[in-house]
Image (tube, rainbow, N blue to C red; front, side):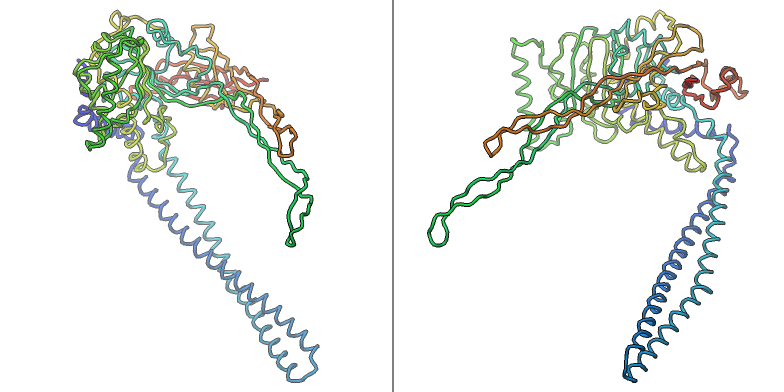
Length: 605
């Protein structure tokens, strides 16, 4: 039986952190064993590469010194030749014999220096430079070949990295979290129809990547989205004006005089126009039927990391008095009633909660205690760095610490020609990945009722469609980059949406619709009063954005299992992909693999 995580902070510190590090290390060694890479041979190649790099670095320094020395000698040689020529000219211009003798001596000395340096450069310096340059070229070719040998040697291991390793390791260390092989239509239907989530139909959002799965039968999504909203931008313009006016003044003799002077002024104006705005968000979405009518929101609190000083206590007391006053107000629309755990109320502070009874059902004394510990933490996890929004049966968590996490754990991140470096990076990445994912879930794990409550579908083992959802299709499209699908006239990022396939087959075609904006320069003239007493039209340049879209067909083929699954070594799980390759011979080089889906963009012919 899988145990619940009732104390997320201490469970991670005392148990899960070390267990996941051990699981990760063991998994990597399993990959190495399966790949057949000879670690000693790889270490020898890497040592050779490092030695060659060191030799090349020293040789480059020596070459630069010789080249600088040669340039200096050339400069001295040319200067000596010029001086010799000048003294020779002086020899013919001077009438006095002693000056002619001096000019002759100078001429001979500088001519000798110039010729000697030329011979030195030609016979000694330049050959040394050429020899060093040739050695560098040889060392470079040897380094390139050695690096190629190392990459070839590590090829079998690099091919074993796939999209499922990160979620597989997380699930192994935390069995409560079960990940889907990809975001299926069944999972999307479950969230939409049974939990009331309408985010899948949001035309202003495109999923860049998403993992879906369940916790004790309750669905979740952890991913990244590109969101669009029409905002406003203020454009500024200016106009320089000048005019002549009379000025009266008194001169030094006390007489009044007048003169014409030119005045200058810069008039400023601005206009505010609609402008598309695109932002990226990483999020955790969780569906649970517990407290189905409850709605609330909370943001990180400034009191979470305050120390126990005099002024900190004063701030806390002031804020607590404000909460007490808000709790006693019976005339507002909120049913907020202050709980006995003032630390929880001060730090979590969900003042907009819609149902006090369901809120208390969710946040029992144990849940309050665990949430406070999570929010005050400054050593184990990430502390109070998350926004928590509950809308009925849908919970949104927006942790700040996910911003720097590669949620997709792209297999290419781990490719290396150095086994030692690959091991170190693999372990570090997946340990940090587990920590980031775990503490994204921690606010949910701190609520015991969420883990104890199983969904209706899980209890009755409802069977869902396993075909990839539109959000998975968006993720695949975004892996190419939005510019791959953007309209030629688009000057903004594009929101990529996809059409629903009209078949239940594993192989099908979809259309990727790229929604962007073209831009045209416009000028508004704003009337401003100048210092000359006249009204001037100040030009303000701005951009008019017009929606544009483009349809691009994409072909996909789903496979039942991950391509590089460790469960089998006979390669039979690649059969479906090979059939796909053979069917689309002309596009074979364009086909990509993302999790358990092969895909390529169909070219217009």
